[in-house]
Image (cartoon, rainbow, N blue to C red; front, side, top):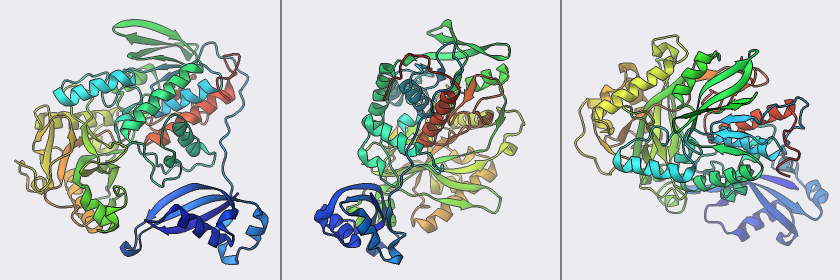
Length: 542
């Protein structure tokens, strides 16, 4: 295979023009191209009058060596033999597992850990405190309609984790030399995700399609011998000889025990009661920095025209943005979880507390763009050195947000936020929102320095995207679940200070999104496989 990089074509190009451009670069006829696979596609919008698609493609031709030999010296960085990092799951170890491994949590980290272990013959047990997808969706929709929160079945808890009700973004900054990134995408595609996620520069699935993919993965795990326990919460750990011996679980108020010498803690960033239980059980953990802020809405048309220009905006998909600012006070302000054509959602999981998030469907057809604009906070802001001080910091903000909205999500226009006055109506566009909301005094929510940093960041972003700091930009609060406020420490074998417990994913402090969490779950599965022999006679997959 020959790889061709930096292949640029107009945004309105045809497939024929695509193949002709490749053939011209390789000095061959289009008929000599046996196959063509897109490896990457992005949009270059730096020059609004010359916006183009940029491709990396792998080409199969009959006389590959001759084609490569004809390259000019200045083309060798653009045209070269294709080399991919193929993912390899490790061979099984020798130690014996007395019982199946248990995975606590079915978000991306837990799900992908379970998938690989089940495929390779380890028959894992997956414990999920929330409900399976079908029931969870009903509970979330009912909450958005009635404001009656189910504390164990909501945007945070349930099959698929918090990422299920999001944009389904699959980009990450994690360096990947072992092919895990590509393997995650391929697994998702095999279970119903669009094939385009394999090559898009900023791939996303959308919350509507992601839900089906997760259910399909669960069914495959079950077919390979995995077992799911839904509506089941781990409430205690039992140790023998300073090693894990069993998990105490509760389902519908009934307590039971699962004996195991290995548990993966893929609990997610909102399992605050589980953090407390693990700390009391003796796991080493520490408070970590994260970020808090508000979800900000703009008309999607404003973002499209700013990023693409007026004409290209009519052709290209809904535009995204990524914005950062480093302030003189040492704080960072940045956009997070940007949802083109999306909705702001009530993402609360505890009574008397409000948290918000953003969500997009696969078509990204909503009228508004939204993202969290967040300000970094560190343990110095938490007022305590306790490992769970970040959790308490979040809770206080969420409680205040609940009070400011009278139990509904409080909103405020940016201009009114700066002036310190409660908004009474929207400006030139309404909010795209899932859940009950009302106008409230969001300017009272944060400590003064965080609020000032938020405003300063918004104005800086207005230089990059004209109109970003418009007075009628809609703010919703509070965005507090950007990442885990704790890190459960682990060693080079991925185990905690208590043998048999493997902290994993975003909740444990080792990931920051769907893709990185899934990749961390894969790392844990690999570590388990390298150490232990399979506990079934044959592997579940090929």
